[in-house]
Amino acid sequence: MLLIKNGKIKTMVGGDIENGYVLIGDDGKIVSVGASIEESADMTVIDAEGRLVTPGCVEAHCHIGVHNSAMRWEGADYNETSDPVTPQMRAIDGINPIDETFGLAIKHGVTSACTGPGSANVVGGTFAAIKLVGNRIDKMIIKDPVAMKCAFGENPKGAYGQNGRKSPVTRMATAALLRDLLSKSKRYLEAKEEGKDPNFDMKLEAMIPVMKKEIPLKAHAHRADDIFTSIRIAKEFDVDLTLDHCTDGALIADELASEGYPAFIGPSFGSKTKIELAHKSFTTPGILYKAGVPISIITDAPVIPLEYLSMCAGFAFSAGLPYEEAWRAITINPAKQTGIGDRVGSLEVGKDGDVVIWAADPLVTVGAEAYVTVVDGKVAYRG
Image (tube, rainbow, N blue to C red):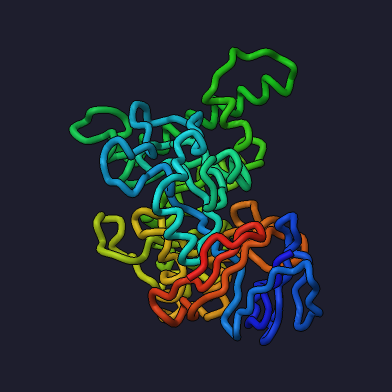
């Protein structure tokens, strides 16, 4: 068993424990969390020496592994641009865990991530939730699939519509292509449920979990009108939805609060490289939270390197998001909102032993690294 003691424990499910411990069993699961414990000979002990101790950070939207750190074409496995509609693509078939970005994320306290296809396609394929330690993706999966990626706005237009090369050329065409797929998927599922035998279609098979509300559409949408289009279509077909990026969210906060869909906000750091990023700001998470929108903060790595997830939460804190909510936005919120909250995101009995002892509080010290990162009860990084 692994005992982390003498830490300021931030469990994310209750008040902090000023001088507490986390005990993790040999199976990698948390056995107990509390203020005091009697050590035994079968415990490996790490003394946090008063440092901040939190759950491992959780990234709700990135492309780690499918976009490798070596920025060459061979590494670009995150957009299958032979077709604007590719729901049959699976992130796990493109993730390369032998990439330096995994180790850098662990060094900075990010232990889990939802990763998958980029946003060139109207429908790009499924995201998977993975641990960031390992060399074989099959053994790193927390849940697969967790969402079906779709995209609105500039990206699909830019990938296919330049010079009128291929649809979609307009936002209308993007919406039409998605509606077409959802309509066919609905009829395909109905036929199967009625005992009929529709001709096998890999695209439509991949959409069944969406139509059954087992996973949501993961909607890349920056501009307000694109956000509302994603909501309109989700309602038309009665499917679940997450609002990924949500750059214009602060402009329509009350409307989004009335809808109740989770908003994965970011990437908020860096230059405004596209027209639809005009309103990009670290004030957005605080405005949406105060309006009542469920929020998480994302890096969209590699747009922002994944190791800077906690830094982004710190900037959001400095721009008006309450401190505790900034922590929740990179731990328990993304875990729950991506369907892996039973495993990660908080320090609770029975959950995975993913724990970070911080060298300094990363929400107030820019660039702070982990002192120790533990994944599934094993030390994955020690500073």
